[in-house]
Image 1 (cartoon, each protein chain N blue to C red):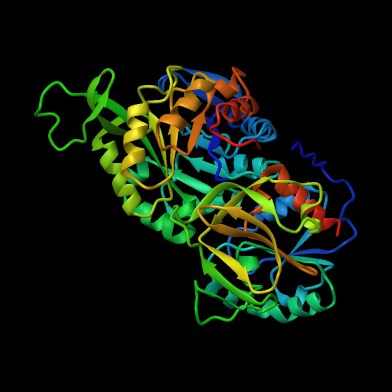
Image 2 (image 1 turned 90 degrees about the vertical axis):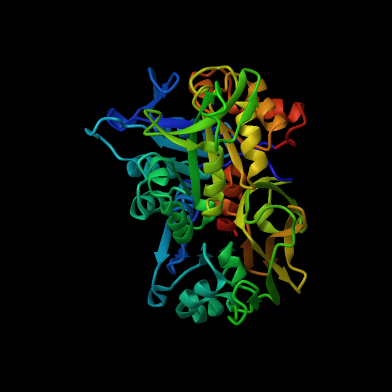
Length: 274
Length: 210
């Protein structure tokens, strides 16, 4: 049986000693959670199916590199490792693969240079090429602004989704759902889909967003942003075609454990016993 | 099932465990896994340095490129197989044990196991990437000692279809997938034990203890 994945995400600030894992609230305020390779080991021991590391370093004063983080992690952690943030070229990707990463997630550089998706897929295989999309709801107030956009019905009203880059600091005008379709055509292997409206909240995943992307493309979708409880993970895996659920704070701050989620999903018949 | 994998202290310290580096993909994870288990793997990147009690052939990439790059090592691998040395092929490493592959039709494999490598005949998405449970078909296969129906990590579009009765484990992914083969001292996994958590480490430990 093919299994759905539970993926803890480590947002790493490499300007801090030992590349601390931090977690923002709606992409802003931060709390410190721990040292990346120690958290990764803890999650691996608890049954994580994969671990995502995102470099969110804003400062140019870096004390460490993602290469160090991945090298130290891969000595003790034997599940797939995905690295995102700051991957701007095939060469950047090669460095983290050589350090022990299995996949790279590209976002800003893919929007600025879409050919990078083709190149990463060609050199390292589609399975190693994840495209991260940070999508923000734009509610429709007039037919004019809706022109050329893919409109999604949500309980809060009709909206389209706009891609943001630079960790949510810049908006691009790009329709996130159309972009997901292009990403698939260019050979990406997977989409890491984050709702910026939900990220850092505990309100649950953006179901209409995840459902729409899951129905329009044939790639595995990792749902991200907003997980506040096990029922949210159940909801997104049941209500949409997402094959993986990503979460950060709930695991960092011990709201519940990955093993608890897995037991819960078995009980809810989303997953077979592992 | 709860699997306990102790971090090895002495296993394999005295034995020469060769990981063949023939330029096909990253061998770091495989090395890390064996190091974690207490072995001291030796990376063999030239046939002249070949000397081993156990051999690992990892590999990610196409069959044609793999066969071309592995060619200089093949005589030594075949000698080792004849002399009874345990050999473990992972993913592409396993594919090359067979006679040929649909992926690169005119390229001959090592022919250590009769049969060919075929594209997965499934309606599900290819490549097959992710965690899938396996069914152990040969309970006596030493690789699976202490293990049951485990979830393991796959990344592939092709799988071996041996003509000999050598399939040691299978998986379901819209079709039957060959997950592992076993013929005497030749072992192969289609999945990546080095990325398959504790179940994968246990298989590698079982291989070390052969």
